[in-house]
Image (cartoon, one colour):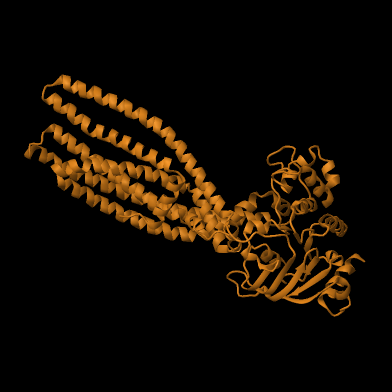
Amino acid sequence: MKLSRDSWRLFRLTFKLSKKFYVLALIRAIIQTIKTLVGVYSLSLIVKSLINGDINTAMYYAAAIVGIEVLVRFLEITLQTHSEIALFEILAKLKIHISSKLMSVEFKYLEDSKYLETVDKAKAAVTIFNSHQEFLTCIEEILHQFLTLCSLLTLIIIFKPIVIIVILIGTAIRFYLTGLTSKKQKILYEELGPVNRKLSYFDTAVQDERYQKDYRLYPLGNMIYNKFNKFLDETCNYLVYFYKVLGNNQIYFSLVNSIQVVIIYLILGPSSITDGLGVATYILLTASAFSVANAINVFVERFSELRRHTITLKPVLEIINMKDAINSSSGGLNCEPLESLRFKNVSFSYPNQNKLILDDISFEIKKGEKISIVGINGAGKTTIVKLISRFYEVDKGHIYWNNVDINDYEYHSYIKQISAVFQDFKLFALTISENVDVEEKDKAYIKECLYQSGLEQKIESLPNKIDSFLSKEYSKEGVDLSGGEKQKVAIARAMYQNSSIAILDEPTSALDPLSEAEIYEHFSELVKDKTTIYISHRMSSSVFCDRIIVLDKGKIIDMNSHKNLMKKKSGIYYELFTSQANYYI
């Protein structure tokens, strides 16, 4: 019988988060043990006094026992209130700790299916199985039963050690059964993981309002609903099987317990006559034996539950033990505003993939330059942005900022120099102003950036102007912006940040060509001399750029101005530009 390494890790983690909880748990365990001891000894003392004809002493014992019970009950209620508060605090701290870790893991994990499956398992452990709370409850109960056993075992050993042997045999059988259950749970949990992840996806898909239009226009609704039901049924079947295993174990436990009770009676009954123990001692030993048997029974059950919840919580430990992202590290050089950004022989492939996304590319961007990176899908355009943003580290080569490798800079000072708008940008259920700067340090400049991005007319039409909420989820007066308007808010956020380089990665994909041209015109005016990188399938951003980097299959195949590239009528850039221009002629 031993706790697994993961159980100890969970114990150390929770103890570090709240020592108060464990101190209260120990005090409660001591109080509950006293209550158990009073129950065991009280009847034998009263009976012994009555047998001796000492009614006054019997009444004294009875009064003392009632007083102790009242006091213990008062302490129990008081401690329970404080313990529940401490439990709530430690659960809140644990959730915060997990959330903080989820937001600080290396970016590469966020595009790794195994990591995403681990996250789904961890969420299920906390939100569905409530295993983090059950784990702590088990520790409390185990502590209580352990103290009870230590208090009563000595008494039984002195009078009837053979009873201990009977109890230990029963305990061994229970541990054997719980071991089988734990093995089955581990196998089931591994099988359930992929199914549960699919269930989570389709559960979201069924309820998410963003999918509802498609369900009404295309025959997708029934298919998605059927998929959801299919994976829900599979999950339920797994859980039903497991709870049947637990139910069978409870039957076996009850059978073992009943046999144990009969044997204890058979041992103590005749002994009380043959050994002259007396009625009082017989009552004391019987009560002690049953209390010990019950304590061991509960101890084994809680120990088994502890192991089960440890298995369920293992994904939480895996997440917590993952390597922190570089943005959580300290140390390094202070990053100064950009003078030059240089890629030197950079090669890169995504984790667990053999295909090179970037293959030995080199280029340099000077302060104040406007650069456009173009190429067909999969050419590696967005990957360049991810590497500049230090979401990933290069496989080969170096990226230099002011002739210093970007990994030598302290992360936060480095990232302050970069503002970016990604194609899959996110806005939050906050005000328009807070979506630009959550601290709202300069509302006048926030407003200027929003107007420059083309939202002046829209914002002026709103009752609360830039203080309007971007969702009706938390405010009845919240507004729903169009896709293009949301992109303009994201662009305003990038404008607002006082960085030395701005990156626009497909930020205008939801805009029409005229709105896109307007955005780029305003953006160029606002950033002025700031270094800017544009990535777009549309070529409108390339015309006013100083240079254009043309990517194909991870390699730079050309780099020049728009005017010079258009002279190469056999080049990819000329082909891309003219084929797009034909749509608007």
